[in-house]
Image (tube, rainbow, N blue to C red; front, top):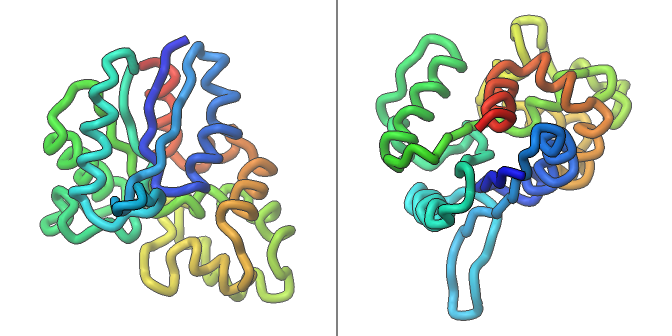
Length: 216
């Protein structure tokens, strides 16, 4: 069984890896081990979850790469809300979201400089996966304002293209319909009901990452 280390942005991504991604990867003789990003260190210990600075992300990745038995080290971090000093962000290039995220991932890989590192940034964030099947998503929200809260989605070719405006990114659209939306609980429950197959069919950037993990 080949072991993969994944630096996760938070608890939701950690649970996604354990409960949704790993049951699939095991059929390819792979097993992913999620690690929560360290947000800060104090005298009482480390606090984990969330991305607050690139320096902390980089330190976590370098530490994971010290495990020479791991097949690769990768990430499950949102494109939305990346720190200002993230590699390439100040001069990001590309006409489409997919081109821009690819640019940042290349800059990320170049900065780490290790062949066993494969960066993955979620377009634009975890909640985009939940738009892979709007009918299932609607069941968990408030149907009376569901479509109005989401706004016009037909303009987006894939869920990953739902934009990253402060009021229009995927999570913002969801919380307008369900004010008590809990990402670690509701997000995972919805994702399980949608299923990995559908998410991969609708989200090409996410699918590309999973394909890599299947074969690394």
